Every structure is written in structure tokens, then in C-alpha cells.
Length: 222
Image (tube, rainbow, N blue to C red; front, side, top):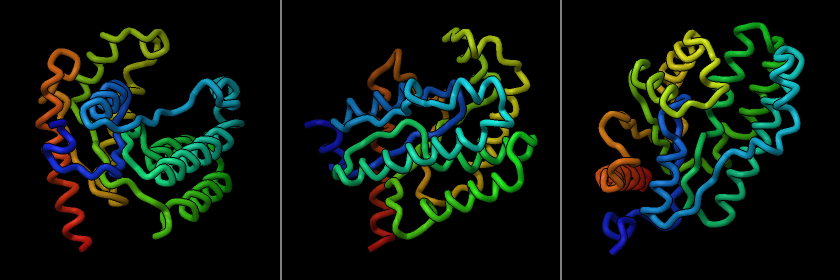
């Protein structure tokens, strides 16, 4: 008996993974997909026409970049639900507006007009009864020190060159965002309580908690 059947997780469930850089979103996405027999949905970076321009000039391209991300994530979310669910999704559509677009606006790299246009578009597309929200958002959280240690361990050059102050700010922004998030049910997981790389079996207690959350949510809806 596989874990999806054992814990009664619906075949059409859609679970989204969220959290700041270094918490292990991709590892969790792949681990859950393999254990549940679900498909994965990852962000497409290589085909983004604005990314290089954005890194050279935040102020000129932040609006274009965020609108592109919004459109791509919306299309992917629609594709997942048209397919009939059964997906684990790396990164949520909600982080773009709640963290990144908001950050650019506050830092002055997105104008008031562009930010108002972007948030209006986001709300029209996503924050309506017609948008298919995930069954569950799993938020991976940990202390700033632990996350920075993980970033150093994986050794990606661009991340190694990023000032500590940036990670501090992102950690704070993510915590503020999730504390006020209510678009769909949230399961918070402390990254110190499991290690999917060294212990693949640590996925089962997580799946048990996922099953409980989804069941409770569906009972409330009925």
C-alpha cells in the first residue's frame, strides 16, 4: 500500500510548497511527489525574457518581471486543475504579490502606479471565488541561522555573493507574509524536524499531517 492510499489523500489534491530561499522547497516537492505518486510543478526560469534585464536594472524591469511571473503561475495553476489535480507545486502564486512585488514597491524599484496596476491585476485573477486555490499550502520555516547555514552548504555562487542583510530581510518578509496569509489552509513545518536527504522515511509523518489537514478542511467545507 502506498502512502497516499494509506493516509487517504485524495488523488486530485493540489499541494503548494512555500518558504524563503534555502528551506528545501524543491527537495520537499520531489519527496512528496514521489511518495504520493503525484506530478510536480516547478517554476520555469530559463525561458523568462525579463530576468537578465531585471538584474541589470531593477527599477525599469520589476513591473514587467512580476507581471510575467503572475501570468505564468496563473497559467500553470489553471493547467494543474484542468489536468485534474494530483500535483505538488514548488512556489506559490501568492508569494509574488505578498513578498516580492510589495518589496519592490517599498524599496522604490516599482512605482506607485505600477504597483497599483499589478495588485489590481493579481486580485482580479486570483483573489476571487473562481480561482482554484490549492488544497493546502505547506510553509517550510526555520531560524535565520539555520537557513543561512543551508545556503552556504549548497554553495550556489550567486547566493554566496549575496549579503547576509538580504537573507535577513527575506526571512522577515516571509514570516510577516505567512502570519497574515489566509487564501488557503496552511501547514507549517519546522525544517529541523525532518531530513529528507538523509532519511527518506521522515516523509511519512509529514504525509500523515497533510492527510489530517486536508480531511479537516474538507469536513469544514461540507
